[in-house]
Length: 452
Image 1 (tube, rainbow, N blue to C red):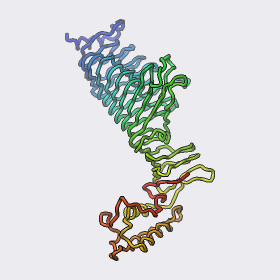
Image 2: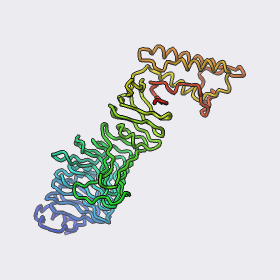
Image 3: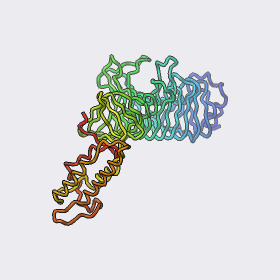
Image 4: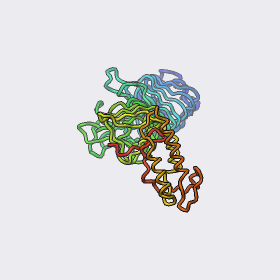
């Protein structure tokens, strides 16, 4: 009988081998439907059917091994790891599901070496994937989730718990609970070990998207130096509506710290604002109801048309790039708070200015015709309400007429509404007297300057 067939035979015997104190070795090409004792896997595995781990059994992976779930499901219904990656191993798990449905005390997949999850659903009651210190975790095209919160609501779990180095790409990490302790990503430290996790073009869906802290609940040794840091980097993607970011000192009695940097374009709540890197973009996906905020230069904040914004206070730097979509404007109230009001539709004016006037070469037109254009720009009512749309429309017609009437210094009239490539518009020349920067409700963006 071959080793593979012998292994399948043993597995099907059920509890007959449950008494074994040490795991037996197996060179496996496929697994039995039921495994009742811990098994060490040293060769590639391809599942041909769903597999259930019972009697607290688990798969210990030792060596350079690929587990092809082949569209099947590996389930652990008792309190143990489903898969335990040993030190020195290089393991890839792909194309299927791993479910830990009966465990609220240990993670579903534990990695002590190098693990790649590609196209895998890991669904666990407790923390789904745990990456230990000095270990490397790669997750791509996968869906990782947890669901456990203690009955007294003092302890929680996470989709991914990281002590080592991890990168997550094009994946969904979420927690099924709506309790505040439910977390998508834990970034943790331990003794002298810092952790680093990078999340790229993925979605974090949980009451807490990211949490960094020192875990002292289970007697974990504290970080020993100020250099021990739990670092999180998010490059693009989505942080779920209403989620919070909890980056804090890992423990009040230790010197260790957590850090987060957000790059690229991220859709998320305004709490992400504090972590935006240079050239990053935050598209706010959660209504803002109170709070104190600063919009500074170096990044872009977009407030979509369906998002309400009401801040207790707001500081906007002169060069802040704040884009308010829809026919709306950001205004300061008498009590110092800020909110968005509905405005008339300035889309036509804004499009015309961007296409024909922004960057206009002032040196080739007569002063008289430029003065008419300047007066038309100054006459635009920048605070018109929706019921004053006729005033905006009239100002637009006057602006077009003034532009069409521009006179070249050599007295040759310009073509009516020419394309930018033929109009003498130069992008490096800024029309200093134009006040259209403050135009609201253009449907494209509003840039606010000198707000307070």
